[in-house]
Image 1 (cartoon, one colour):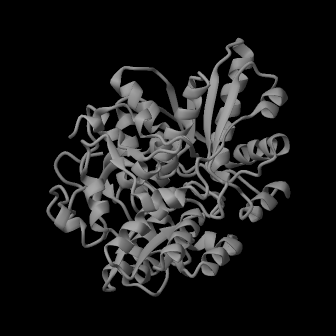
Image 2 (tube, rainbow, N blue to C red):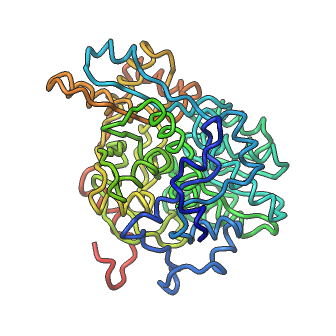
Amino acid sequence: MSEEKKIPYKIYLEENEMPVSWYNVRADMKNKPAPLLNPATLQPLTFEEMRGIFCDELCKQELDDKTPYIEIPEEIRKFYKMYRPSPLVRAYCLEEKLNTPAKIYYKFEGNNTSGSHKLNSAIAQAYYAKKQGLKGVTTETGAGQWGTALSMACAYLGLDCQVYMVKCSYEQKPFRREVMRTYGANVTPSPSDTTNVGRKILEEFPGTTGSLGCAISEAVEAATAQEGYRYVLGSVLTQVLLHQSVIGLEAKAAMDKYGIKPDVIIGCAGGGSNLGGLISPFMGEKLRGEADYQFIAVEPASCPSLTRGKYVYDFCDTGKVCPLAKMYTLGSGFIPAANHAGGLRYHGMSSVLSQLYHDGYMEAVSVEQTSVFKAAEEFARVEGILPAPESAHAIKVAIDEAMKCKETGEEKTILFGLTGTGYFDMVAYERYNNGEMSDYIPTDEELAKGLAGVPKFPGNEI
């Protein structure tokens, strides 16, 4: 590595404070995330094995846990300039409403047509597919933000885009579906009868409302069955957290500029893309012993992988066609309750975040959805932005932390990720406003059923 690449990350910011390199937090982790395993051999997945599913350059990024800064290609930075840097906002009105001595900041990622942070990785993955000369890509989407973002990126670059959308979201969010179709994507409710794995899941779970694990299985099969196609993923993978590091790099640059240091950093956690992106440069400082922060991952009580899952190797998908990842998991067969309104429906957590959590560098809490929507409406009424249900998980805990400061008199600085807007989530808001929304917390017995499917081999005991 050249001496230039060892210079602290500030050197890699342009005058407008937009990063020119992604930050790879794995380079500073003493305990590296465990490698993906080939489920047939139980050996670390090689580049050659991986490239049949992912684009070549993305395979290299997935396997690289040593290079701290990876240059963002000029074409991607050009696209980023349409909506980046994204706003870092102080929530003055929320602070006043709560009457708290805490200072609350949020990094707002909803100021693009996709309505979320997902576009940061979508354009990167589509770019590498285009550069490799591929015809198109396949993917899954839960609440729909990732599918929307990828359809935008593919339209921009002239790639075909095939999206398998979790069935309950496909039905609850028709407008999100239509935005994808407007950008040229082919959207299929998952599980479907268009793939072998989809038909198998439907036979085993008749009437299922689907899960991200189901949709991933179908998208991977579709990619491998078509010449000139590759699969791309919107969260979980380390390459995605790498691309999303632009969130944290921008946030840190802005805070450093004004001499602000957050005490608490909060993000919603499903697969880990936004949380990982927000905390990466701050976590890097903590790992290097340069500064200390409190990191809080917030997940739904109905899909509590960090707080109630097991840290083992598990399949990344319900159909068990993908590699094994070591992560906090509820079992690849776990399907969240149909009344769960937001995204954050994945059965596992990013291997990077799982390792950091396991090593004690961050905390995790789970929250029930009625309290999440209460926080969302409180935020909307005073800050003027209708948040996505996913983002509202972070808002809920940010409010909780601010109220603790009110009780103790501490003047903490809180930073949270506002991952996107909720304007396509009005069915869920309607259910909440009508008093029809309920909370669901899976029992230990229900979680045990999902965990029973975790692969058993020496060293992988639950």
